[in-house]
Image 1 (cartoon, rainbow, N blue to C red):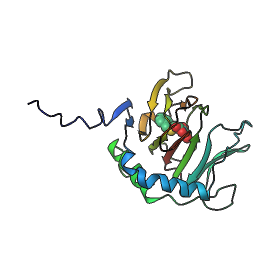
Image 2 (image 1 turned 180 degrees about the vertical axis):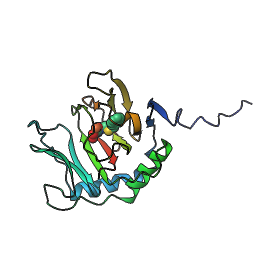
Image 3 (image 1 turned 90 degrees about the vertical axis):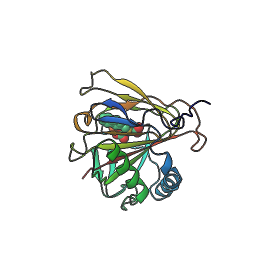
Image 4 (image 1 turned 90 degrees about the horizontal axis):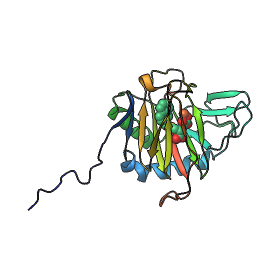
Length: 216
Ligand code: MD3
Ligand code: FE
């Protein structure tokens, strides 16, 4: 009889390094899904999806909302973190315990211990939605890592260089994948290619991305 392959059901590579301090953790969010998806629905009920305007006057193709003590917003006056939802004047919905638990677990796996996010930006992509190459520079302390969770339709993530002109690598992301990056990779340019229409069995024609930060 052949030796059974004990690792046949395990992910091939639990940590894929895409930079010196940037990692993809394939399927890392899957065990959290049963709690995660209803928690997202409750947040969207309290703070609905909206498309924000950039300082340059363009409407973003991504729709977004936030939870946690601080939420990322944009308008003609600039990008900033705010304790209140500008649309309702109310505090953003609290960060659900399952959100913080997943973010901390992923940060630990990537070697960033004691990560305590105070902001979770929730982005929604539809077919054709894209995110142009940019840096995340609105947070107070660039020494803090960022954790992102991909749900629903697959996407191709662009992992760029330290300058806009630097070469970028295309990284396919699927439902349940988590990325963690910090340190020397914290200010790399990055973006998302226009989404293709490949409906997902649980989430249908959308991709939802959670981005956890210590913003304040
Ligand atoms: C940054 N969101 O909201 S997060 C954003 O899929 C944003 O919604 C994208 O960029 C999204 O600001 C991507 C993932 C990510 C991954 C690796 C990075 C952002 C990164 C590496 C360096 C800097
Ligand atoms: Fe970003």
